[in-house]
Amino acid sequence: MVTNLPAEAKAKWIKVMEARTIEEKIKALEEFLSAVPKHKGTENLREWATKRLAELREELEERKKKSARKGVSFFVEKEGAAQVVLIGLPNSGKSLIVHKLTGAKTRVSEAPFTTTFPQVGMLKFEDVYFQLIDTPPIVPGGGPFNGRVIGLCRNADLVMIVLDATRDIVSDYQALKKELESAGILLSKPSGRVEIERFKTGSGGIRVTMLGELVGATVDDVRKLLSSYNIYNAHVRIIGRVTLDDVEYAIFGNVQYKPSIILVNKIDIGDPGQVSRLRRIAGDARIISVSALTGEGLDSIGNAIFGELEIVRVYTKSPTGRVSDKPLVLKKGSTILDVAKRIHKDFVEKFGYARIWGPSAKYPGERVGLDHIVMDRDIVEIHLKE
Ligand SMILES: Nc1nc2c(ncn2[C@@H]2O[C@H](COP(=O)(O)OP(=O)(O)O)[C@@H](O)[C@H]2O)c(=O)[nH]1
Ligand SMILES: [Mg+2]
Image (cartoon, rainbow, N blue to C red; front, top):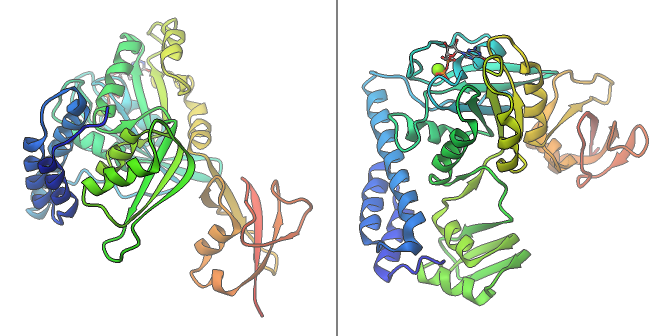
């Protein structure tokens, strides 16, 4: 159901979009929320806006503390091939898992809420590193760290959900999933996606590119919806199957898909029989049974992360022959153009041709252009124009 917001609320949302500082954003969001009428159609939106407000307030607190040098920041700068955030209820074993996988000195304890700050470690997988982040617990329905931990998830490349096999893993998983979803983080791939690129100036109007289909709505409906939010110049991309609701959510920018992996921990003492029940409700999420205590199952985590991230490794080779031993890590579907950009900003302009060895090459040393799609373990040699 489209939210059917009154013009007043839409005008307030425009203020939210225009807010520059975090303080302005908080104030604008508060005013927006009070202008949103309470009915079934706005329920998700109100819940999302309330959570976003809580996150922003916590972030503001965080910044104040930081500037007063009283505390450590929750934000973690990305390092390595990907950032993976481990989340879970208190005592599920997050800290012990991160310690076992990375050697990081996390705080492990029987007492809940032992971890109060993100703790970072690097997990080596073949020739790449993943950054793992141990976090304070999430408490479904409301806990002191929920907002900030969810903020970490928003920024991460992958979320690892740690469940405790001595508890009811199905209901714990559902509770965590709900907590993330109501904050706009989806764990299952949506059937479609909307991208809205707004232009502040110019008079290009609303351009809609269809890379999929609009279900139960027309392009004209999209235009009308956007103009009701005072958006008159924008490029909208419809990817996959998309409803008018999805377009409205894209205006709010509030839903985002995150790849995830489920770890069923404490399998040494828990009930392994529950895993098949979890599998039935967890869609296509990958589930790994582990014991942080005995080490069982931990070996397969690196490979699972790699597979879930849909990344490829490409090794560059100089025309004189040396192949780099450190790969470039790129999204699946990347091309020679992306490789060239990564090596040097001038490489695209000066690009002549590339030679390629490995899985994507028809024959070793095949000569290819900028649009050639690379595959995992390719070796690429770029030749510049004379
Ligand atoms: N038997 C068993 N105990 C575990 C396992 N993983 C963690 N624990 C214990 O569970 C408690 C909580 O672990 P911790 O890593 O601090 O959990 P966190 O709160 O999620 O970070 C500690 O007493 C751990 O020793 C496991 O796989 N098996
Ligand atoms: Mg912990």
